[in-house]
Amino acid sequence: MQNLIDLTRYPLDQPGTPAWQSLVDDCKAKLEAEGLFNLPGFLKTAAIADEIEVLKPILAKDAFVHERRHNIYFKKTIAGLPDTHPALQEFETSNRTICADQMGNAAVIRLYEWPPFARFLAAVMDKPDLYAMADPLARVNVMGYCEGQALNWHFDRSEFTTTLLLQASDKGGDFAYEKDLRRDDDPNYDGVAALLEGRKTPTVMHLTPGTLNIFKGKNTAHRVTPVKGNKDRIIAVFSYFDRPGVVFSDEERSGFYGRSA
Figure 1 (tube, helix red, strand yellow):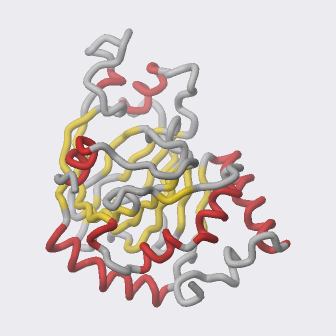
Figure 2 (cartoon, helix red, strand yellow; figure 1 turned 30 degrees about the horizontal axis):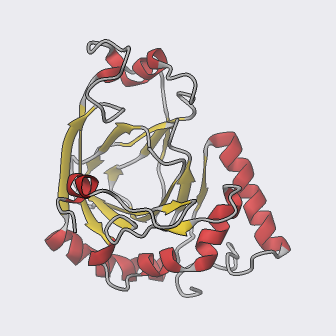
């Protein structure tokens, strides 16, 4: 991993040492205060260039173009909420996706399967263990966004999301979010409506290539703004769970990837 990760700055290979514990504590504090944390320069510059060279042809040739119209909940109706409520307004999401089974021995696969990576994430999330998905498609995805494409407003189903930006677009492609817009016991539909109607201003963050980003997306509304220019935004998404053997259903695979196997 020393050729991929800046292990001097981020000593994931030294679990239990003071340097490792200091990194974990710092990340936990930022996660608690801001709902996310970033590790800029996590992936080395040379490794980024090599990975882009590997993944761009696959994205160009074999990616599934995922286009859908949806509301922030990815549900047609919400019990107790009128269909005309502004929290249910719809918008477009579009990106290109490749799956773990299409990437061979790419660096993002090697990182995902490297045990110290999951151990570090588990420590930050205060979990005894985190497990790689058993799903051959969903475990690691790489998503590409070209001119006009965007990931629109949504909440995640999982407690936290782990991403690694490989290439930033010339313009746009920024990460926008509103921390703790809802709670498990309070859906805050009026607050959601205020965000979607522009009456609430989200935090907008422009990440640099090589940045590892971990955020709690279950109750934090977030999106990727539309990409502008000729340079695609390319990002890897890693899926871990607190139990082994997790897989998507055939229906979920078909919806996200256009195939079930």
